[in-house]
Structure formats: structure tokens, C-alpha cells
Image (cartoon, rainbow over all chains, first blue to last red):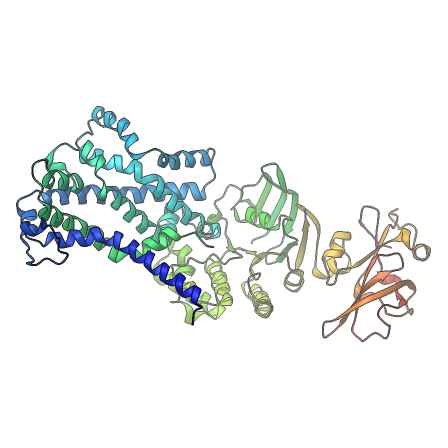
Length: 278
Length: 347
């Protein structure tokens, strides 16, 4: 049995944890709850958590009366392409930084990582005219490129931590076996890097999927809009606020991320903690 | 025929020169051990031979062909790494057949060669397992198997037994020696363990500070060490070394100069050559401070009257009392003499 003092500490800890979990889960619970409520129930003075008369009307409205499917399609195209490109390019860069010695290696790596130091919004100011001048403004390619700039530094660093821990002797053994650098990367490094690659893929996918600022600024056509700005501009206008449909839309656009996480979260946690202990 | 010639090989890492002009000539089928303490350059030399490091200068020839501009995989050498370096995501069979697959060898041929190598090493039941499912000794065999399937002219071993426990190491020593006889290939074996070098090698290259201190058969380096470094490095416990100027009575009993004009400065006596009594021709006063039993023999540690460290290895329980002054002795034929620079003098 625990001493009295320890029992008190345990209860304090549990209390704090409960408050923390409440604040973490409340918005999700609220989103789910509201998405099943009729419009009149949404604005009750005493809000309900469990809808009195659950309805799928919000979902129907979100799917049929808005362009949410277009936003989903655009979001998937942009996020998948960004995630795939980030993963491939970051793996190549990280392999180079981790296993090859060349002049300026450390400075170059520092330069790449230092892109993280600039506030997200600040770089948009310089990216905006660049996109306009290069004809990439209001294109999905331009948006992908912008996301790539921001996802790459952290992704390179994550994969670098993985690769640098792979023994050099493994690569040397492959060289002795006759493998060239591409084969070593394909047959040896990438398979051993799977958790790291999944981590980076998920990270960059989430990054672009959840973005609002860049997508809102760099995309002006309704048909190219992604989920963040799409939801905002559709449901939360100045004159009208359709919270029920907005929440139903939010649930729909959260599904890809929830599904991806459910299947891949084991790798994601492994990936983020890799190299923490030897 | 895989004769390996190492000619005036140098190598530096930045400003640090790690190989300082090495020359070694290894005959076909010979088993040569590169022996030395950590940092002596033995692994760097092996990596240069493998092609994993570029040379600073000099030449390495396999047969009559210089290999310094040839890719590691094309040199006809296979290497067994200290950590085994098995590909963790591949099965044992895939690990062993990887080089052949890259080479474009047909699948049935790969299977046949892998099967043969596995049979030699007794690892046939392990072919479908992955490295993490194997013990240290099994991984070691797989690493050797990966080298064997390539049928190289030269095998390079980089401290392959250092991760194994003492019993397994002793067993693997015997297996590697058998394998060498069976394959009739040239083998170059890096180790810091003199027992491995002494038991397996046809010749030992003793290295220190990027230099070769001596090349010779195991008996040669033990019985006729070229200098004080080799004398003290080879043999456990290490050779006792005394400056003659501290033992004037010995100076009178030993030659003051040898045939080649060298003047004895230091003498060395192996611990097992010292008698625990005064029956030998040359005597030294000593005090023994502690003894260690190794089962088969007993070691006595103490100091001489001149204050030098003294170790005696005896197969019998000595009658002398620990802590009491006594006289120990040895014969002239058991004395190794060295000049002021530590170079061996023969008399």
C-alpha cells in the first residue's frame, strides 16, 4: 500500500490529468455532438452534449450543398503529393548529410534546419510575390512547393537522426558486396528507415492537410481550394454561421488523418523517439 | 593466385599519419594476423586492402595487379566485419546471396552456392531466419558464410571474434583455422588478441603507432622478439624487463658487446623462465608481494632489489614466503638482450 503522502500525490496527478484530457477532448466531443444536432438544438441556452434528436441532415447538407468533396479532393492531392515528395527528398538529403563527408556539410545542414527558425507567416510575405512572378500563384503545384519548403527541414532532421544511427559497417558491407549508392539506398537504407519514412510522411501530410494560412493566401479559385479555407469560407461567413454543417464538414475532413493515425501511429511514436536512447 | 603485396603504404586522417610506410608480402594461402593495440593502424590497413579507404601513398597488389584504383567489390576480396554487419531485414540466405544477386548470378546458382557455404559452416537450418533470431556465434558464421559464397581470393577479417564470449571465441578459433585449411585462401586477420594471432596465424605482423614492429611466425615473435615493444606485447604475463645498469653483477656475467657491435642496455626474461630458487646461473634478489592462482599455474608479483616490477609464472606451488626477501634466478640462454634503442641483440 502506498504511503499517505504518495496517495495524495497520485490523486493530484490524476486530477490534473483529467483537466488536461478534458480540454484536449472537449473540442472533438463538441464537434461530434454538434454535427448530429438539429439547427435549433445548436443554439440552446443550456447546451446538450448528447443530441436529443440525432440527425444526419448536417452531413447530408455538407456533402450535397457545398463543395466539400472538391476541397477533400484538392486537399488529398496537395497533401499526398507534398508528403510523398517530402519523404523522398528528405530521405535523399538525410542520407547525404548522415553518411557522406563533403565540404560545407555542416553549414549546409545548419542552413536547411535554420529555415525552421523563421515564423511561418513571415516567409509567406516573400513567397507570395515569388509565386505571382513564377506563375505558381493559385496553382496546386505552387501550394505543394510552399509546403515542401516548410516540411523539409524537420523531415530531414528526423531521417538524419535515423540514418546516422545505422552502422557504417552495414553500408561498407554492401559496398564490398558490389552495391552502388542507389542500390544501398533502395535495398538497405530505405527498408531500415521504414518507421522514419512513415513518420515523415504523416508529419508532412498533416502539416499541409491542417494548414489554413498558406492555402487561404496562395489559392484564390474556389475549385482549387483545400479543406481548411474551404470549410472556413463555406460555413463561417459574416452573415451566416451554419455550425451544424460546419461541424459535420469538420468531422468529414478529419477522417483521413484519423484513419492514417489509427493505422500508423505505432510507427509515428517510434519515429519521433528514435535516437533518444542508445 | 592471391599473393598480396603491400608496398610502402601510407595513410593519413587530416594531419594524423596512421600508416607510415608499411611493407608486407603475403603468400597465396597464407594466414597473416595483423596484431597490435587499439589505434596502431591495423584496421585502417585492412580497410585500405579492402578498398574502403583510399591510400595516402604506396601500392597494394593482388597477384601481380595493383588494386588501388579498383572498387572494393571488384578486388576479389571479401570482408568479415567486427559487428558482422548483417543486413537486419534480410534472411540468412538473402544476406549470403546478396553479392551474387548484385553480380547477376542466376537464382539456382545462388541457391546452390549459399547451400554449400551453409553446409560448410553448419548453418543450413538457419537459412530462413533473420539475424535478430540468431545467437552471436551463429551471426558470426553467417558473416563468414557471406564472405565464402563470393569465393574470394583474399579473406579479410576485422576482429571477428571480439564480440563473442571466451568459450565461443576459443571454439571459433579452431573453426576458422579448419576453414582456412579447407578453403586454401589467403586470409588477413586483424586482432588485438595475441592468443588469436598466436594460435591461428602462419605469420604475425606486430604493429604499433602506424609502424610494423616485426613480421614473423608465432614462434619467432615469441622466442625472438625484434624489440622491447614486441617482447612485452607478446606473451601473457608480459616479459620482465630490467636495465642492466641497475644490476652490475649481471652485467659482468653477460657479454658487454655482441657480434654486430651492439651494446646490451636492457635484458628481458619471460615470467615462466624465472626459477623461484637460486639454481640458475644468473641471480636477482627480489621480494614477492602477492600471488594469483590461475589453476594450471600460479603467478607471483613483486619487485627486484633495484625496484623493477617482477612477475614469475610457476607450475608448482612455490615454497617461498610472500613478503620475504628471496633470490630468484634464470639461465643465460633465457635472457633476451636489447640495445639502448630497444632493438634485439643476439649473442
